Amino acid sequence: MLLSQSLLEHRSFALDHYSIPRLAPVEGDYTYKNGEIYQIELVGKHLYYFFPQGSSVLSVPYVALANALGISAVNEDGTYNAAGEIKIETGLAALLMALATVIFFLTSRLILPLGWSLVIALGGALGTQIWSTASRGLWSHTWATFISAIVVYLLLAAETGKRRLSPILLATLLSWAYFVRPTANVSIIAITVYVFIRYRPLFLRYVVTGALWFALFVIYSLSLYGKPLPSYYAANRLTFTVVLPALLGHLVSPSRGLLIYVPVLCFVAYLLIRYWQYVARRGVVRLALFVIAGHLIIVSGFVHWWGGFCYGARLTTDLVPWFVLLAIAGLEAMLSWRKQELTNSSLVAWHVQTAVGAILLVASIFINERGAFARETETWNVYPVDVDRKPGRLWSWREPQMLAGLVRPPLPGEFPKIEEQIDFSSSGSWKYLWYGWSAPEREIRWTEGKEAALVFRLDKISEKAFEIKLVPFLVEHKHSEQRLNLTLNGRYLQTLVLARNELQVYEVVLPGDVLQEKNVLILGLPDAVTPKSLKVNDDVRLLGVAIAWIRLVDRAGAKL
Image 1: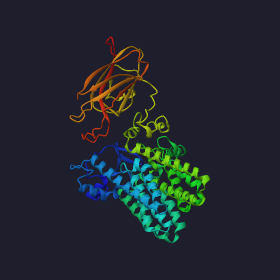
Image 2: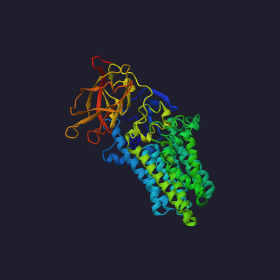
Image 3: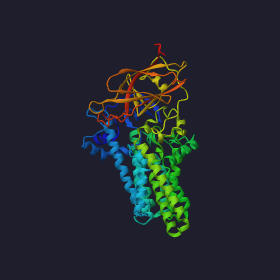
Image 4: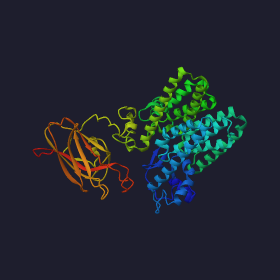
């Protein structure tokens, strides 16, 4: 949105007009990034947005409207306004995906009755990555999904004879899908072949329009970057060195698998296989299957196939309109079979399969609701270990991302020996923290959630005094106390009622008959609340207490 602002204010793709710190260049992704600000690349003396700029261009009208309402991604002094960026992104993303839902409904109504069309539209919106990813912020997937929804509608409308196919509009939409996200090249290739076979009289206008748009894109890239395509579009970013594990991960990884995070797709596949002979429009179905297969292969070509910090099957978000098309075709085939073949003997099977489909749809909605609203699914990417540093977590059924916050993560493999005093603002404190913690701040670290847990090892077991210096999150006249329930190795110890908004030292006795060599201390925080809910600020963390340090003292007074 900062780029959209630059296009509005300065008619420039460069971000040089704003107070962005210029950091030492860092080489990566076949370009030079602006230090740790990986979203910005350095080209000569200029700063450019590294990711595809199509979304920023298409978003200019909405950004102009936001500016009129006093919202901007730029502060008055020219510095970056992250809060303004977030407001614009979330508003536009939600609007685009709401419109995509309407398009799903209109697409379905080309073939299906009203009731089933509502199921398709709401299932496509709530049971897929649209809810958990594309509507949460303006990913490049968001505009790509919206454009693809229109493309699918136009293709099916032409196939059913409800609307003539416009080659100029189709080529323009596909070109902008590519400007928004380069993986759209799979759809472009597939649809080009489809148009040549199915609508040959329109092919020349289609190709010429696409060629003109691509020529403009090359001119734009040459003028900005001095090369035919921007760095993000470099084909050599695809290595295909881990293509088979990546493909498997995109399909069935507990934390990135498409079939795991949108399980209703298994029912769609069943419908197409079971009722294939009743599928009326096999041309567009084959087209959809080709696009889906090609896209999966392309995104499996990246070594970093899981897409970094995100939720579930993010890299297949763009395919949702094609899944909707397959669902429409499968339901049409099922209803045709029912009209012609359903008998009393097959009625039970009919109800069973319908129930299974409903269960899978509800599961899909639940899973994507978790990604949309549960902050724990976001922090799963970082805690207890950064997923980019330990991608093996993507395959663990003991801590799937969708269940973060509902089930405890597995215990650490090692319990560190407790030191004389653990400073919670230091990086060294991480080895004692199991779950429920925020990042360290100056002198403190906040708990995050309704529970936080510590692990530690003792060489000598005897009764200890547990000393903890903390301050509760309190807001005068709104949130006057926090309860802290302490449980050691499964046994409840004590509840502290905290009502003083200052750092204090509290002491709790840890009985010798409860302590073990390996110990788990759980801090229950039933009154944890977000500052945003109390209108303190925009912080969405569930804050309970902020801890400065802890230490164990034996009953004789010697510190451990």
